[in-house]
Image 1 (cartoon, rainbow, N blue to C red):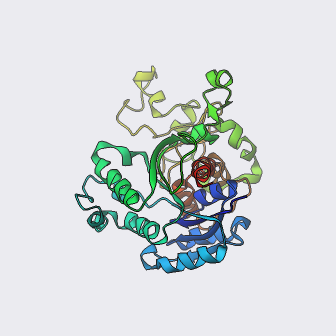
Image 2: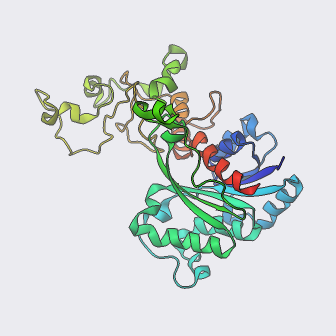
Image 3: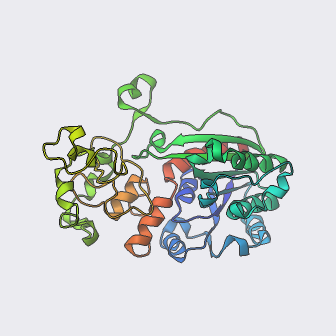
Length: 351
């Protein structure tokens, strides 16, 4: 059986890494600049045999990764990671007629480093993750530049726009993946396992996982967190009035509320947004404002094991840091079940 090892860049809390382990891909090295993230990885047994590097990727020489890869004695090596999305949130051009020149644009330095490692190591494949807006017309040149550089390096590339719901994650979360292989793709797209309940049986798939299924077990006193309390805050009483699955618009004239407290469409849509136990969650964010949802249907903030479960982390996965740091780590992560689907898709092409 072909053994596959992964080098993980911008590992964070390990969403892509756990997805790799679920795909029977051994993560031989994980890197991040944040000490809390590296400590999170250190606390989980998945990473007992993984070399953990706390450093800025700019400062990590490709030779170090190459040495680790050679010592792993794996048949195939892949690179996985998702550079922070800031460079892709700005319009601009970082690749022109000369693809190599493009990766020197300062707006894409972190992406440059990912490409630098891929070019220097010449792995058998890679998975790169980023926000869906990377495919927006204003960022199209950035996406095309990445593809151009990867294909010059000899990779067959594929762009996958996916929703985490389709892979068993109880959350509406759209992401874009660029997959590259030196082999040949066996299938057109990663295997989708879930669909809307109304048609899942008809097409032989499982129904989308709901928030209730994912987190109901954590709604006991055992998992209480002081930070979850919201009833005495500025909008605590308003939150109590909002029905599950709704947001602040439930308290507007638009919704027929008798004494409107807000004006519809004057607030961001996730203001006072409350989960429904019968529906999947909305996207878990890394830095939500104090009254930005999703909130629990019982009118409180979500607990750490709840946001972790909504992201599809394993049940007993541990996170290190204060509450703000943990929220950021989980919110920035690739849902492991979604990561597994993407890595499985790449892995098929390596055999």
